[in-house]
Image (cartoon, rainbow, N blue to C red):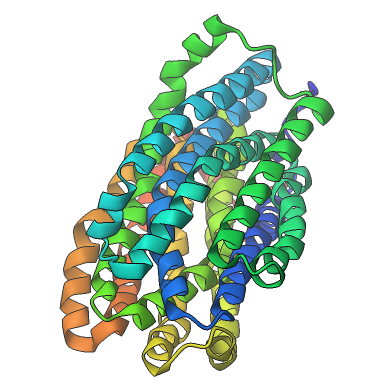
Length: 455
């Protein structure tokens, strides 16, 4: 880790937000695009049950994936803060410790999910052949989530340094490989769902390999593992990581509850729900990337005491989020009919898709604001505030809203519930976050120019 001033301490904050988000978005969106193509190839086998099985499996895998995201957030926040303080040796120690802790933690989580996977599938409403197929898919793919977490945390280390392009390559390179092997395994070798699982495992393994080469071989961002250093960082790491994981786990809980509601309307509705899930992460990859991308910007400037730049970063992230969401919403509305044809959705499934592209996607203007506030709270020492807002949305309000609106509108009520609850909590969180960053370093508050990002 080269001993140079943090990249985010000077220059346009909007420029930093845009660069880090777009490079992160390119990598993560491409990875999710490949996952969507995975579902696309499965849909060409002509069985809605296979698509439903992937929908159920995703609802379960989402829990373990979210734990990895929480660990990545903690890593980025700690390492970037140390870089902002010019404590470069400490940053290397933290990076090494974070990777080791991540591996141990994810092995435990994956083991737990594998053990109870059948109970989780039953609770989400999976039954019959769809449940059996989802169970088999999970047995194949769950262990590889440990490798994926290594890639994610390594990407967080690189983003903490401002190396957005290299962080992007951690997902981009495996995605290109998966683009080739997905149809090879699923269609040409006629492996079907097993082929999709095998391709996913290979992609995650390559992701870990690329990540480790970059952080160890190229950037030399890791120190030699030291038990004392790891022990010393446990408290500050988990002070951020535990609330961050709880925060990230809220979303799969909400998704799990909504999957259970939509399962009552049959495999066609669940298949469409699976398509909506893939469309969400592909179209709004920039929003999902935003929270991870700006954590390093917040942390470096916070560590250096540049509170006016912290406020400017928060403002610029909200602006970027709104612009990006509006563009994606328009594209999804225009593409809705074609997407339905690509995935061979029946009329019931098409109604669910239409509700998302014409209504649900617009909610990301404010749902994205929730993610911006989460990034700020996690990076600026208030991770429990992120936990509160996310669980308010997914753990408290989502199920009642889902029950109410599915009773009124059927399967599409799931989309309406997810959107309305997300937008309401997003607005509250965005205002709360702005009030908080406005109070940081009150002596510097008057220096903020709201019409132009600081140089």
